[in-house]
Image 1: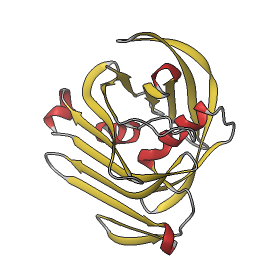
Image 2 (image 1 turned 135 degrees about the horizontal axis):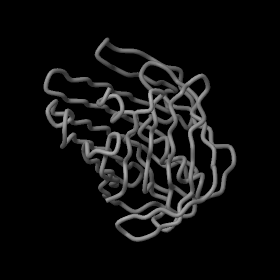
Image 3 (image 1 turned 120 degrees about the horizontal axis):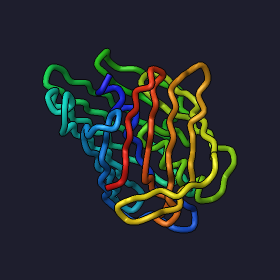
Image 4 (image 1 turned 135 degrees about the vertical axis):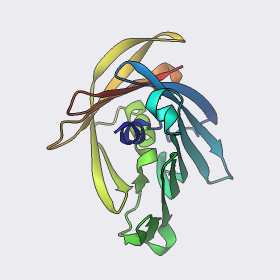
Length: 229
């Protein structure tokens, strides 16, 4: 349960507007479960070459059962910008625990109109779609669209062995207390059908539309909270 919550919550954001390229960055977040410290996450972006970027989400369990189990999750998205929006080229997921590990990778080849992947069950192929995202890039695209005041927040996402549509809605603005002071934020919620899980993301325009908080509430009431440090 703890590992699944960490994996599902650790999203990444950066504003990707058509008018300007984003700057490389690294930000740290504190992760808590039901109000108790659980771990820490680092979101970072770096430029690989003239056309390619790498976005990384690195999460480590530092307290409680997450620390005991040695939970460490590394997600890496190699992507390009297309008309101001991110588009996945390669994705890797590496989850390490004391008792087991899990790996998954994805390769998107636009020129060949092909998507291939590999997980613990072997190789697989998916149907290619222009602008396809991996789950580590979803709210990166979301942040850019919020910055542009886009209304249709829908994204085609390759996750595990299928492609789904992720849909979000802007719910309003709020002011949050952070280590950087009070910040105005756009509150965004993911729309899910037939699911009791609720995910809320607070995006701060003053911080280049980076996330300052991500909260997930499970159907059983369990919460996982990620806050900017």
